[in-house]
Image 1 (cartoon, rainbow, N blue to C red):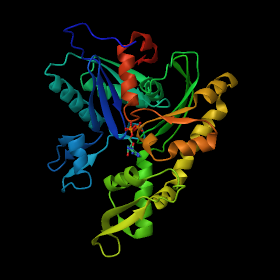
Image 2 (tube, rainbow, N blue to C red; image 1 turned 90 degrees about the horizontal axis):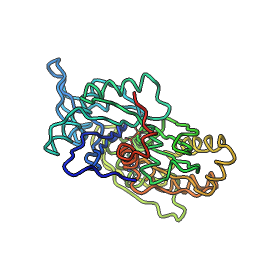
Image 3 (cartoon, rainbow, N blue to C red; image 1 turned 135 degrees about the horizontal axis):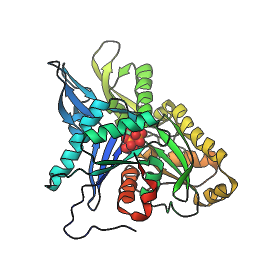
Image 4 (cartoon, helix red, strand yellow; image 1 turned 90 degrees about the vertical axis):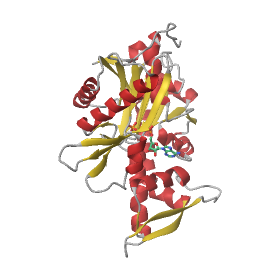
Length: 347
Ligand SMILES: Nc1ncnc2c1ncn2[C@@H]1O[C@H](COP(=O)(O)OP(=O)(O)OP(=O)(O)O)[C@@H](O)[C@H]1O
């Protein structure tokens, strides 16, 4: 059940999917209000760090900053790596959301998504960042649970589901039943590692240096979990700096070559799913044979990843609708719907 707020009531409560690559904000009663890259540009020139840009504006500066300015991604592998910068980023996004609504913020309740295997230290870091950013109360929700709710699965039913969330920093495979996590396994492989593997392959094979943003673009435009079966090898032109003479140059690359470059990482994603399947109790296993596997997170959009996982497991695999939004949507629904309150943990 989705609750609507009484007429004239302005909620300040929000759910934040604080991701390694993207941060999304869902405000109770308003829906999804922000979707920006988790990047902050900081000027360090005069010894006192100053925030120059956050989100999409900061991402545009990546790899192009002048001396004295750096772009920082405060999360790595799904957890906060730089707490001061994470705090600045959360503050900026909260201010932006409330600025957009034209209302002043009264200490909101924040629900923040965390990987299931995050440590107490990592969870405390999130609470500290959120409290200093102005939250009155902070609750956590496991990303896989949020992803399943966002994918539209009836997680409180006595039925087992297997959700695989492939984010920028991590891949988490989780079996859910009766509103809780029965098992979960994760591997620190996600979109970022795929980008690094693509950049390193192009450096070794073509002597061409490319930046993070270019590697990500290649993955999104022609990347695939395996070679095309029909021989229809998508091609793309890529620009970078020649390592032998330092001069800018352009080359052509194909999908098969990119699929080979990321094959070992795709194998690690398959392995974490297989490991999770091996742990499942028989009754839940029967449910999963029937329900299949649901993929969420931006990595779910990698071409033929669903096919590859289906071949390895023998199970049907579906990609959730709007996989990049599932975690934030699910956390937002848990905030709005009393029937889902049990999935939130207070800190
Ligand atoms: N079409 C696409 N093909 C392949 N990968 C994609 C595509 N679109 C987005 N991605 C990747 O999805 C990743 C971001 O996904 P998402 O926003 O779910 O992660 P996140 O929540 O920031 O990370 P995490 O959950 O690990 O903290 C990025 O690495 C991005 O490059």
